[in-house]
Length: 431
Image 1 (cartoon, rainbow, N blue to C red):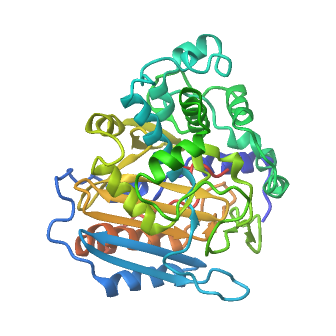
Image 2 (tube, helix red, strand yellow):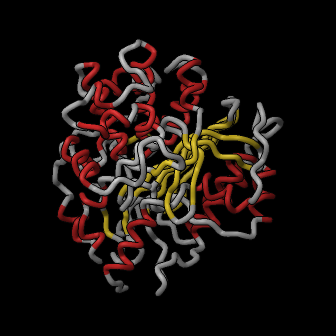
Image 3 (cartoon, rainbow, N blue to C red):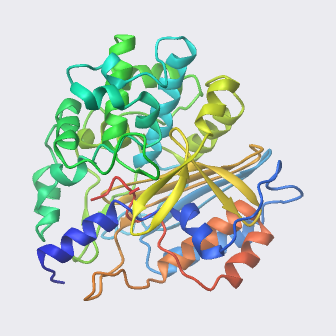
């Protein structure tokens, strides 16, 4: 597949903008459902239907997908497809997986812990804490809250870090495989690019640079490396056993390979499971399992990681643009999604070769997480638009069934508008 620089630039913008499944479902479904205190009242886990829906994603072309769905004390786990296309090694439900931008929820929780302690003021200017990194008038105008809800309008660093993607090739993906980026370098790349708007203006614009800055802020006020702080005070506090910031380019523990197609520019898709994730930093470098993610969001909504006041701040949403006329309701490190059975909270994530979605109902009972090992599988037409792909509606069917049970399955059958799920999260050059 060939494309000129202009078309590839549009693809990069799209890759930074395409929403996750939950956000896109709202567009496909039309009028969102009214939020309810219990999004899953009376629902149960239809294990056979969930299994079939996962198989359908694989049969549509996804190499491998693994998932966990919980409803109260009930749990279902499943996997379909292969972890390695050469050996045909099957995927397993408990595989360790790169979770991309779901890292942002962990980082936000860590910052809000410091807000509760009085060490950070959400509405203080960033220059109070990082005067040398964000100097001048800009540092005085941008607040900590603006970093966490993407209204800082600092540009995303991912494009400048992977410049070939703007020039019609994917060589940057291989050039950076073992490169170590310092977080300060990533921030400078974002700050050097043209701002996407005035600080505080809505809609905001999703930018990974915001959460790299949040990590540096956390490090400044605690005196502890941000990844170490998050590990001690968020991951361990939530009781997560398979969640971490890997110390090497390898994924620790049993895992799938990570296949990236980049819209057909890489054909056949290439494995990027060995990759230095410093380019994502505290915006997206973590690994986890689907079980750990469900446990994490449950602990968050139950007030086990931050207090009620801080959770309320997380759930104050603003409109955040993803480009292309698409926007979502984003809080501080998580977004809301109004599905046919009510309101859910969570995040999606994507890195080269791996995508993830994690959602929890407003009452905390229904939880779902799934991971995939093939990204940017869609192709691009001559106008630079994504062509329909059978994988997309198959993922939406699984998501709706997992979130809403029978009502979700009915909504999936009646949906007339296909959507693009998370295969180009804002981290990917989504998100």
